[in-house]
Amino acid sequence: MRKNYNPYLLPPWLRKFRFFMRHCILPITIFQAIRTVLLPTTGDILLLALLILFTYLLLTDFI
Image (cartoon, rainbow, N blue to C red; front, side, top):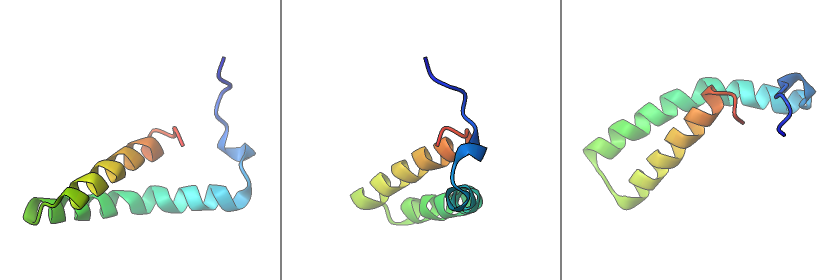
């Protein structure tokens, strides 16, 4: 059975990094989506998929 997630059990540097990434990942993902719409390549599509997954995981506190 999975234990409850408590972000305060993480080291302080990791909490700060998560806080920073949580605020930066959404604008980066939106920029990549616009770039993919204008010039779609395979690498851009894969990068966008990874960014969307990473954004979802950060915003739902799964990571």
